[in-house]
Image (cartoon, rainbow, N blue to C red; front, side, top):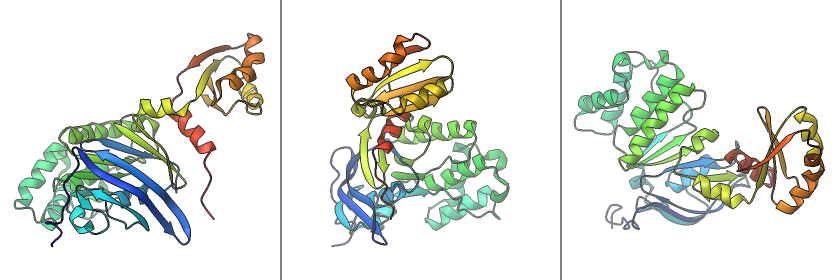
Length: 317
């Protein structure tokens, strides 16, 4: 039976469905027992520190890397036995710019179209140039482009063959805020058209642009869901403090039982704890002094991730 004939029917709306994915390199487990589903047309964000296993996980989810154990499907194909079929429907944008710097934007895109055997490479290239607003730079060498324009060109190359699934590995690192916003606007347009997007990022504002997120630390999937669900699942109680000499207050609070996290945010201090009663007892003497303003607030996504990291164990060594 050939690979196409062996394609498994998709569960309704499910693009990725995997269970127990584990991967080790050099005797070190970099991804441990990951189980998850991704629905069609979602922008799914992967967050976590450097070396946390984000890229390895994404590659296993999509059949680009074979897990040591675990199983599942991507786009209805078995990730263990049908990776070639999966690759035909996936666009992959790496952190490092990988197109030809001595070719123009138009030449790069036309080359990609020909590699993919598209019936009208020139027409497809022109459509991609127009879609991404590259008309005025179509003849410019890729090596002369700024980071934001290189990013836009790389995205154009990824979507040229009309993939069903798009993988973006830290796509906006080193890109200015306006270019980042324009990039994310285009990603949302693609998702609206039915393309599923997996994106790894370090930026909290980008995480909040995703439909769902997953947080991975040292190879383990710690939480996943919408931003609202992830914050709610954290169980954190957070107080925001304003007033003078917050640094001294932060130093004192970090030593108190019941205070799990203290983090400065501009002219404010976020004080958080997993046990509401212990946290309230710890901060009560400081609130009684009335020298600073205290108010309970919703934990931010960054509060949640910092707290998760504090409970994670490094898998290096």
